[in-house]
Length: 180
Image (spheres, rainbow, N blue to C red):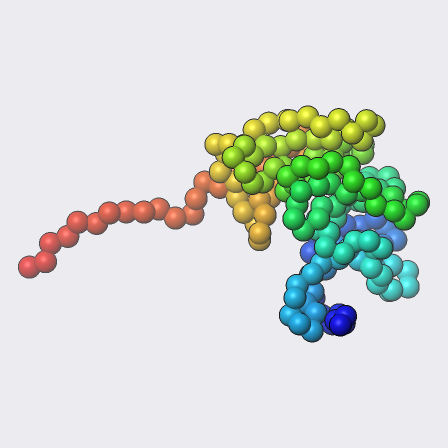
């Protein structure tokens, strides 16, 4: 028996389209059986209408290309990079790999992503022209700051990775005292 969706949810990972006419975001919801799911939605600024991007169920971390032609996202299991073409309205798989966050370079030539889990965490990138992946830097001994559920990361205007290091907010002391 199909379950219906309820309208409440939490919106995250919002992106303006480059033309400023829409906002794309990820929405977490629960159905009547209290099962959680996500999808990617588009808010049309001109008419206020919200629509679900076709085929975006269970996709997370949407990020739009600088030219507005593509949208990259990952399935909730974070094991591949998916690409939505706004012209054809279809999704294609770009790569099968462990995915953390995804970021476009300003020129749209690369998608940077991090391997947030596993024994060998790293920042890698995928060249859009030919789909070639390359490792940019390892993160094995880098203690990353976790914001929400994921480590924060970004790119400089030149396309270099930015990471937020966790230097700690607490200190542990040992106290020796004597009672009289």
